Every structure is written in structure tokens, then in C-alpha cells.
Image 1: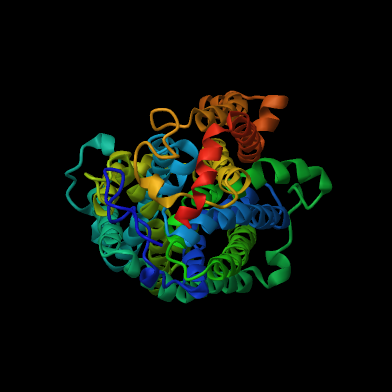
Image 2: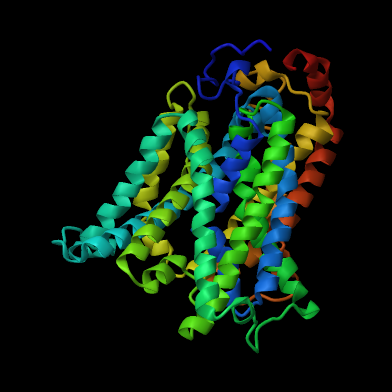
Length: 494
């Protein structure tokens, strides 16, 4: 394949990856997912449900099923990245237009900036607890921050330390990310298993640890509405971000087999294991401490002993680092670069992401972990589900897997549409989001919502995905002209 020429819509980071740089095998991709999946939000995805009265079976079941479901759009969106070596913002140009692609790219980037800030705060907090165990005086350092920030000096310095660690690794390039994910994953699994063993021993065995207390939503079929509603949507939306931006990584895969096998091995099983650990350990804390503790940082800090705290917080720091870099920096960096490719490089995009992650003061957003994550997940799932539906429908149903790669990087080609924007895709996106708006507004304002509005919002990702995909395919087939133009020259991009 001949690489496209350098144009105002291209730079070194957005151009297709050359064949000699496609070196990621299935284990590298599996390790990427293992490293991303083993993180505190994965743990709290299930532990938060248990804390709210779900059984551990229902909580883990929702997470497992959700990840099996989301694996499908992830693998499908990976296909074009692996075949053509193109990142997510460039792939989005085929469906949204060479300029319209900035809409899904920026939406994905803003969600990632939110997650970057939250994960950076979690990692910084773990570092703070680690230092506190070794040097308690860190909590009484002279205060220099204004009161509205809401952090003491030690907490802010640890946050900035973890922020700098993320940035340093990303600025060294994709190979450093591959190294970190490959070698960090086995260690992270060991940390999670050790926490599970500790809880089982302290609770008096697996029996008491896994016994659901009376009053919990034991695996009754009457609870399936919740499991297959908000719980399942949260689990799917958890990786709904990566379902869009996975081409940023699959473009480095050696083959389609490597990306499919790697993701199938790395994602569902790892999420199932760590969600089970989160749910079971939270269940056990009721036996051990008399109250459920859903936050693993709070739990590990309570276990006792400086050595235990040091080891556990070091593990949490590494876990958060691997997830944050892969899931929350690469995608927005490429997205910001896509806005002005000739002015913003990948590294500059990463800096923009990192700065936004500070400005948003994420420690204020993470006050109530479980409630925030579920509201957050379903809310942005309503935005990203429609985009995933449009992109997958465009590539497979509309174009039959054929792209004109050169035209993805220039104006006035087959992806120009009208002034660089495919208004059919924009309309399909807006119509896919619309049914979830009442539920989203109610969630943000705290007002209760019932009936159809609540049901649609609980299934926001699925509703948006299916509705937008259907509207897009119908709209493109009705329009037809640009499709025939694209098909006539599709072979030139393969």
C-alpha cells in the first residue's frame, strides 16, 4: 500500500502505520487489555453494585455479559485499523466526512480527558497513601494551595507526580506503552489475587466470603431488569470509549488474527476475574469489618501494617498507570491532533489532554465513586454508542470493508460530502442520542424519572448504537450518489 501524501489533513501520527511497524502480536494486545482492565474502576464497577445491595453473582454477571457484548464492536472497529493501519479519527472521516470526523473525535477526547483526570487522581491518591505509610509528615506539609482547590500540599504533589509519570511514558512513544503493558500485567494479576486470598482468610473461608446477606438482590430473576438495564449498560459503556478508539492500537497489530485473538483472550476473562475479586472482597468486608468497603484504596489503607500498605499502593499505582496511558491519553492525543494535523502532533495532543486533566480538578468529581461511575458511564454511553453504530455500519454495511485511504487525507475526495461533513451521519448521531436525553437530564439534576424515559436511558448505549446505525444505513442508501463514487475507486485504497 502506498502511503498517502502529506497534506493539511495528515501528519506523521495520523498517517497509516507502515508494515514494518506493525509488530504487535496477540500477546501484546492481550497484555494491553489485561493492563487496562485491572484497575480501580473495574474493581468498583462490581464492588459498587454489591455495596448497593446486589449479590456478587448479579454484579459479576452484569460485568461479564457486558464485556462479551462490547467485545463485538471493539473487534469490528479494530478491523479497519489493522487492515489499513489508520487511527480512529481518520477512520471516522469515512462516515462523518474529513472535517465532520472532528465531532466524534472531540467527544471521545473529552470523555477520555475526564477519565484521565479521575485515574490520575486515583493513582496520585495511592502514591499519597504509600508515602504516608513511610513518612506520616507528608500530611502536615505547609499549605500553599488556595482553599477552593480542596487538597493539601502532599496530596497535590502526589497527584502531580503521577501526572508526570503518565506523561513521561507517553512522550516516549507507543513502544514504551507496549513494554509497560506486556511486563506490568502479570504483576497486576498477582496483586489482585493476593487481595482475594487475604479477604478469604480473614472472612473465615470462601463460604462466609461469598454468602449473600439477607436483603440483598440475590440472583433472583426478578432482578434481571436491573442487571440487563443500568448494570449491563454500565458494563458495556465502560469500554464504549475503546470501542471507538481501538484502531489507535489495532493499527499496530501484525494481523487480523492477532487483534481478534488478543482481545478475546485479554478482555472478557480479565474483567470477569477482577470484577469477581472486587465483588467478593467487598462482600467479605461486611464479615470482616461489619460494613461494606467498596473503595479498594480505602480498604487497603485499613488493612494495616506499613509494609502491606506500601506493597498494595505500589500495585495500585502501576495498575492505574497502565490503564490511564493506554485508555485515556492515546485516543484524545490523536483526536486533538486530528483537529489541526499540520499544527498539533500526537505529543502536543497528549499535553493538551494532561493539562485538561489538571484543570478539571478530578478529585472533586470522585467524591462518590460508585454513584459517579454509574451515572458517568451511562451518560457518556448515550453519546458514544451512536458513534460506534455509525462507524461500524459505514465500514461493513455501506462500504463492504473498502476504503479509499488517500481520500481520507485530502479535501474534495469521496469523503468530502458537503463542505467536509456528512450530514447524514450527524443527523443519525443526533437522533440516536435524543431518546436518552430525558433520562440524562434527570440523572444530572437528581430528579426521578419513570416509564419509557427511564427504560431508554438504562439501555442508552444499545438504543443509540442500533438506532443510529439503522438511520445511517437507510440515509446513505437513499442518498446513494456518493456511495457509488466511493465504490468506483475503492480498490485503490486496499
